[in-house]
Length: 178
Image (cartoon, rainbow, N blue to C red):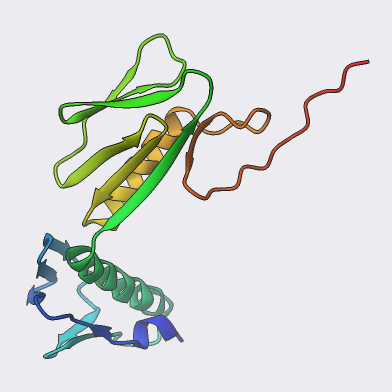
């Protein structure tokens, strides 16, 4: 039994939710998000909350129940507050700079890496060693942050590379010399 799927999603003031067939659209102060959900999931929109119900206790319906509720809650949170991921860059000569819309990362490669953020996503350079990815879609913000981290993941011996803010890197001891 999905306990997450049973919880109602509160709709804050200033947010409008509309449903057309299987497509749910959420409009808020930060923007508009729209997504198509599984046709068998029952989404009920009331005055100040959204309820998600499943048609039966089949395995697929149970797994979709909590997922659907969480995706809708993320949409509501995104259009009201938004999401952000902060990345930290550490290493000799590793740095980030902003040139217009794009961000240029020097990560020890022959050429600097240029990243142009997709529409709806904003990248800010807080300092040469800190980059923040912001947006209203949690999935797209996390994906872009993961792609930036994958350019030079943190290595365990010196700890250099790109990591999430607050991420703990398990350090290894280098080979001892005699």
